[in-house]
Every structure is written in structure tokens, then in C-alpha cells.
Image (cartoon, rainbow over all chains, first blue to last red):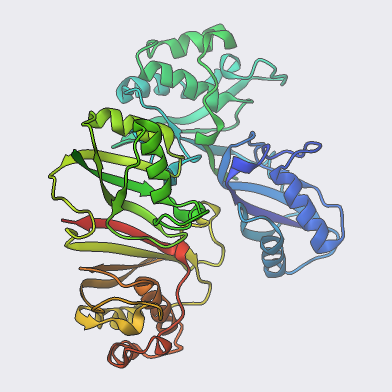
Length: 244
Length: 244
């Protein structure tokens, strides 16, 4: 058995997210089927993070195991030859037998992209969230900063979240603005379901003046999903990097 | 009658180019039909350049005339509300009665984008020409420079070209390379049909070593389309700017 670490980039638009689901087009499902075509084997692929339907990845990491060693160059070319254009293997390397793409991830970075100009440039369609209301970036930054360090993020998790602990550590949470491009970056040791999009939905309410920057603390303290803002649309979100 | 100058941006992928053709989706056709919906009138739209099928525009300029004045803000919102997402009106302003988007254009800039890395990042799909063979950018630059100044460009025009004069003046013709992104920029007072793509097809043959940089002069002198390289694919080409 040989283990491989795969780095993927994908445009999430056409997919029902990372994870295999019955009768749905998924990233994991496409990889599994490409590997089957290439090797004849049923091979499972484990990803660092389960991106939701419509969410993009600049750098998703996955591991897989083949029963027989195959040259990485052959796997690389083979997979990219079979996979659809919007899922690309950017690199593939042999990995230690105990490497686990999800459990060994120390930190992940997500980025949420917002375009604030009056007309969405067509080349950005589906790749940014378009907001035509003016956003107060410094208020958003004051709110974003309050998410750093360890907190119980239950208030920002999907109501259906069922995990042992909802405590996560956020290392970076910042707003950047350059002309009409407003970007939110967050790095953490783990993310709950919908956590980034619920944070962004709340930050956007801060940005339009609908709520105060200090609301973030209140939502964290309350652990009540109903106090946070709506879930921001998937197509602005990117999984950017995974650290091991 | 009131005249307007419209600046458009479009992703050319889904269209059979700028110019109205029977039973084809075109940029001009979509604009005309959006104007009809908005005003009830049959309004003709004249563009600065007739981009080919699949060619993009970061900035196409057009003029149109309405029988009754309409507030530019209303036209702007109305058109963007009706037009499909991949054709956007970026600005619309009243223009002098004698303004002509095509005849008054002093200079245009086109850009051709090439990606040279082994795997095409999926976000660039349809927006760059992917070349996996290594390109010698300095040879391409030496070739590109020879196109500057006034020349008879018949050798680089589509064989079917029927115009009075095939002499054009090129002010800028340069290759830029940044990591895997190779870009060709050309500015001129006018362009013949397929001229930029035929130039790029020839420059790419120079880049892979299939021909010498000096071939450009030979093709210009010969005025023979058969001596130039193939027409580069449309999806790498952008109309970038029109000067008046």
C-alpha cells in the first residue's frame, strides 16, 4: 500500500460540495471515479475539509492509498486527463503511511471575497459575493478581531451541528479592502459547519450598520445560532491553504 | 435624438462575437434586444471593434441613439437588469451628436493571455490559452517588436479580408512574462480581421523554436497569409481599451 498527498484546486460552482452523496456531483466522487478508471480499484479519498456545495478551493489537500505503487507523474497526468476541467490536481506526492489529510491538519485558511462596486465585472461572476450597499470596513475589522483566540463557536455553527466540542482556535481574522474588493480571511485549527459563512453573514450586517461590532462577543457568549447573521452565499468562499 | 457612449465588459465564451448574425447569440444582438425591451424602439448599436466569436472585452465602446432622452442612470440600471450576467454595461454617458464609436477610435489595445504552467488553474479556464510547451519569451519579444510602426499587415489578415487598405500602424507590440503568465499586448490604429490572433499564432511558433524571430519581417514583406502561423484560439484574446 502506498499513500499519496494530493493538492487540489477546484471551482465549486457545479458541485454539491466535497463529500460523496448519492445522486450528486461531488469533488470527492469525481476523484474516486477518476481513480477507479485509472487503477480499476475502489479507492477512498480523504479531504482536509469538507467544503459545502458551491464553495471553491484554491488549495484543498487529500490523501489516498493505492494497493500498488504508481509513479506520481503518471497519477498526476492520468487524474488530470480524466477529471473535469473545474477540478485539477495541482500536485501529488508520496506521503508517510500514517499521513491523514484531515486529522493531521494543524491550521486552515479560508477566504471570503466580496465585490462592492455597482456593476459586477462579468469575469468575477460566481467567484465573489456581490454587495451593492456600502460597507464600513473598519467596523467589520473591529468585529472580526473579536473572533481571534479560542472560543466556543456554537453561536456561529449550523444549528444542526453535532460534534463533541464546538471550541475552536482562530489565529487570524481580518478584513482587507482594496477599491471594490473586500476580503475576509480567517485561519483556525478547525471550523464548524457553516462557521465561516455565518461569521461573514454577521460581519456584513456590521458592515451595513445593522448591528454593532461588539455583537460578535455577545453571539460567542450566547452560543445561540439565532443571534448571528444569515449564512453568506457559498460562491464567495474559498478554502485557501492547509498547514501540516 | 440623444446619443450615448456605452462602455461594456463581456465574457465572450457563450457568444458568436460582437456582430448581429441570424440565429446566433451575439453581444450586439443582446444589447439591441435589451434596448428594445427598455424603450420599445428598434435601436442600432455601433461598436468600436467587432470582436470574434469567443473573444472577450474588458472595455468595448459602443454608441447608440435614442429618439427621446433617458436619464443615464435609468438606462444603466435598466440595461444591466435585462442583459445576461456575462454582458455588463460598465458606464453610459451622453455623447456629442457626431460621436462615432468606430470611426472616431484613434487607437485600440488588445491583449492575448497565455498560461504556460503544466496544469491550468480551473479559475482561468476559458480565459487564457493554455500552452504546455516551454516558450522562449525573449525570442517572442524580438519578433513582436518588428510589428511596430506602419506596415501592410495583409500577411497577418484572414485570407478572406476585403478592405481598401491593409496598412495599419502599430504603436505597441510587447510580450510580458510573470511566472506562468505570458501576455502579448498590441496597440494600433486599427486591426484587420484575425490580425491579432494570427500574429499570436506566429509568435507562439517563434516561442517554441519552430521559426525565427525575423520571420515576422518576411511575412510582412510577402503579404502572404500562408507564410504566417495558425490563428491562435479566441478565448485568450481581450479587447482592453479604446482611445478617442
